[in-house]
Amino acid sequence: MNRKAVVIGSGVAGMASAIRLRMHGFEVHVVEANAYPGGKLSEFTVDGFRFDAGPSLFTLPELVNELFTLAGKDPRHYFNYKRLDVTCHYFFEDGTQLIAYADPKKLTEEIETKTGVPAQRIMDYLRQSAEIYSSASEIFLENSLHRWKTWLNLRIVKALSKLHRLGIFQTMHQRNVAWLQHEKLVQLFDRYATYNGSNPFRAPGILTSIPHLEFNKGAYLPDGGMYSITKALHQLAVDLGVHFSFNKIVTEIKVENGRATGVMIGSVPMATDIVICNMDVYYAFRKLMPAQRAPERTLKQERSSSALIFYWGIRNSFPQLDLHNIFFSSNYEREFRAIFQERTIDDDPTVYINITSKYESGDAPTGCENWFVMINVPANTGQDWSRLISIARTDILKKLNRHLSVDLEKMIVTETVLDPLSIDSKTHSYQGSLYGTSSNSKFSAFLRHPNFSQHVKDLYFCGGSVHPGGGIPLALFSAKIVSSLVAEQNPGLTV
Ligand SMILES: Cc1cc2nc3c(=O)[nH]c(=O)nc-3n(C[C@H](O)[C@H](O)[C@H](O)COP(=O)(O)OP(=O)(O)OC[C@H]3O[C@@H](n4cnc5c(N)ncnc54)[C@H](O)[C@@H]3O)c2cc1C
Image (cartoon, rainbow, N blue to C red; front, side, top):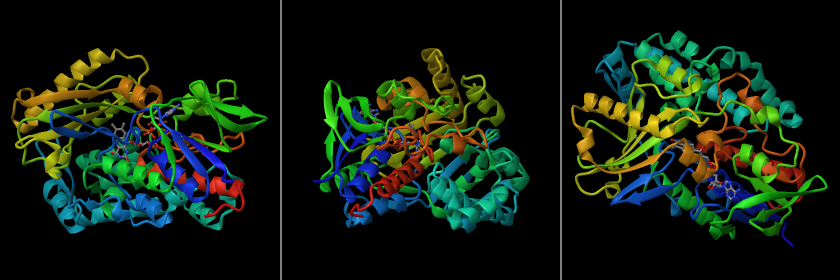
């Protein structure tokens, strides 16, 4: 008889874990509180405008493809994507506009023309970013940091010997200043700290590896938008025989004699051999197993930033905008101080606009665009959000009107808002953080919760709130680590 696995949550990591466990021969049941799969990677449609609700940037598509090939399927039968020729349009307060081309020659020429920074300096920066990623990914992304076996692996030992070069002893901002020596470029590359909800003025220099993913490996857009990733993974899981229950909340992880033996779905028990928890690890300890010893130090780590998003249906089109657009604040340090120290929103926030209708004409009615307008905001610690949202909305409109020379308010035909409170309630993310805990210290990677329970046997954790961290690629890495830990603990599995 097959061994049974219950997965709590159908976020991208929950579904990837379910697929991997199924390939190991488990009978897998995914229990999801929402009526739909995907967690943060979801979509909605209003008045003819389709919006990706959460992630908008797709990198490392090979991590998704890998799940299909593992299952003996052709990923192209499930989903397709294109590499973007232009990764982002950048707008600075002094009127400078910069287009980030995927082609390195065009990119460096554009930067040299607009900022005077020689092409070679950018090439060197991106080469170093690649080198750091190649050493760091081996240590920090692909293995559990909490198993002695990891530290005995010769490749890891080799990568560790380069640790001093990875920049964990400097901040990301200090590294960018030293390497780029240009205010605008430092701001542009500091922004990559926000890709895991962190502050570039405190996060370690190792995060200068993130631009490698976008600039060297490429930024992608799935056909049909980001939600196609969720649809494809869900379909693959179903095709493999994974069972899904939607609109069902797991209320307890049953622990007997030191091992996970099942879950409670409301008042209904479900017995299992192993439990994979894709719920935010903070809530997992507080809500699903309050009687178990909790890793207090881990749970007290500073949370990552959250987001405030206005999904606007816009009755107009803007040829100067592309899929990804950034309007930088005039004082980045002040903006991050507001988020992480003062726990508020600066009056000149950096504004990100994502417009999928630039590539997917069906995402907006003719002559219109679907704008996903996002700013980084603090995690919820009890702020007066209705007041902050109203002020931020006015500040964002003022900024965009100034840059685009329009009266944007008059062009908004639909508006939906997502804030830290609704992110928390829709995806069970503690304080509405987008990426679990922040990477604002050089020890952050070691202080994230492991992918297994240190006290309860047969209980594993995946997703953005645990090792190696948030964002689609890292969440997928967490599922891969869980799968290898399960295989290690259960000799004789099929794959
Ligand atoms: C606005 C926004 C923008 C982002 N932008 C990007 C981006 O551009 N690129 C990128 O890579 N990443 C981005 N991210 C981060 C990325 O979305 C997440 O890191 C990733 O999707 C997290 O996946 P996960 O597997 O941890 O699960 P989540 O998406 O957090 O889903 C967890 C699921 O578990 C369910 N669940 C929780 N508890 C229970 C329970 N007790 N019972 C049943 N079900 C339960 C929830 O309902 C939810 O469906 C963004 C996130 C947001 C919100």
